[in-house]
Each structure stands twice: as structure tokens, then as C-alpha cells.
Length: 155
Image (cartoon, rainbow, N blue to C red; front, side):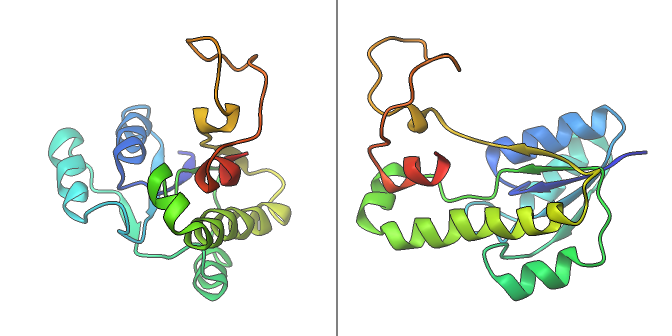
């Protein structure tokens, strides 16, 4: 059974991804610091699929916490959802967003640097495309300058 780490796995998108991975017979590990989620999501996952995945309350933007958690782990893949996501809040408090979103990504990438066989999926955002002129946005759309710190962290 392949082992997948879902960062931010107790958030809305993360928890739905966890459910789908479990349904596809993956072993799922969740790393989530509850900054945008609740521990009760674990019970909801368990009530839906009958499996309660292992959860670690880890702040991935903290170098020491990340290193201590990741150094003894072996994953077949990582899906990275752990990020602050509110555009308006990012404008009011940009350093909070740059620290959290970029440092958590860098800490995961540090792990990947020594685990070449570990697959990686990064959750981006349509905010990377800036103000678009045509909807729906496709991955072929021109990437303009992001208009918020949140968007810039995803670019």
C-alpha cells in the first residue's frame, strides 16, 4: 500500500482528498496544525469511510517541527495543501502569508531533495493568473502579476 502525506489534510480540500485517497486504498498520513481546520474532521473522515488516518499536529512552516516530523518518514507521495488562503487577510498581513506559505513549501521541498522517489503535488490557485480577461481560467492562461500576497505565494 502506498503511503501519502497530505499536508493541510483536515481542511476542506485536503479532507476530501484524504477521503478519495483512502477509497483508492492509499495509506494516508495527515499533517495539519489546525490553523484553518478542526480536529473533528478526523471523526467525519472515519464516519464516512471507516478509517481514521494518522494525524500529526505539525506547523510545517517551523523548521524544527518539520525536520523532526519528516526526518524519519518515508512517503511515496506528498500532496501539499498546507497554506493560508484568504486574499483579503494576506493584504492586511502579508508577512504572515509569506512566512507560512513559503516556509512550509520550502520545508517539504527540503524533504523531497533527499527522497527523489517521492511524488509531489502542489496545490496552486487561480490567484496566480492575476486579473483575467476570460473565464473560465485554464492552465494555458497567461500568468500576470498576482494582485495579493496570497497569490504571490502561490506563484
